[in-house]
Amino acid sequence: MRFFDLHCDTITELCKKQGSLALNDGHISLDRASYLTEYVQDYAIFIPDEYRGKEAVDYFDKVYAYYKNEMNKNGISEYADRLDTKFKSVLSVEGGAGIGGTIEGLYHLADCGVKLITLTWNGRNELASGCFDEEDIGLTSFGREAVKEMENLRIAADVSHLSVKGFYDLADLADKPFMASHSCIDIVDNFKAKHRNLTKDQVKIIAEHGGVIGINLWEKLLGNEDNSFDAVLRHMSEIIEIGGEDIVSMGTDFDGCDINDELAGIEKIPVLYDFLGNHGFSENLLDKIFFSNADRFFANLLFTK
Ligand SMILES: [Zn+2]
Image 1: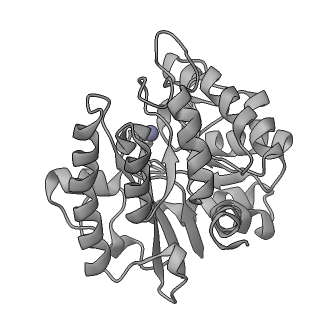
Image 2 (image 1 turned 45 degrees about the vertical axis):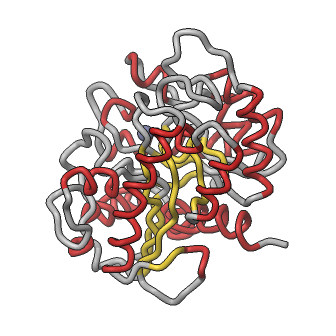
């Protein structure tokens, strides 16, 4: 099978531990991904909320060097280069603080090959309020300027972790499709899920803009009691009912959160695929979810005239 995942924290975690992408005991280890015939992974460089301005840029640069080295060592090509390698990568930054608060900082990320920016993490940064900001100010004026320039640079905006007002500001401003790389829908009643999951209206708006939603496997977002296969099925079915079949993707959040053992790891993806197939999802729909919806999103972003 082929797999396109819109979010993981693997590189950021490996950089901390000086671990190897080829062989490690985290959620994503390439030795356990060898069954995939084609595998595109979005690797996020996660910027902690305590870093802002130059400190955030320096942190990005440090993890970026680790990322480049791991990609080279393992023969993983950039998705944008359209080379014929089995494993490909899309580079993203989780937390717009990685821009460093200047448009020049955005050009630096573009030069590094960043194709997706999660506008905020949980707190407020130079661009916008995050989903746990005590006062929701939406997008800042710099945030608006950055989003417009991102569209010129063919870097997509990601609303996972963004505040509610930030979401609606972005939806008003955006001329290009945007995504939620690792979120679920608000059918779960706990504090984290209330802030991190998308409302029905937000799902509808993402669909209207031609975007995608990567289903997050974090147990807190999937369900309080049931947070395994059935929960994934439930979230996907709800989202499809509102936004149609072209909107659902995977955004595992591997190596970034606690995941039910049944789903925790790249080797569990085919088990989930089979489960969904056994519960009425057609082969065509499964291919959309596990690959082609995300592929279409990035192909439109990067390769259209
Ligand atoms: Zn996240």
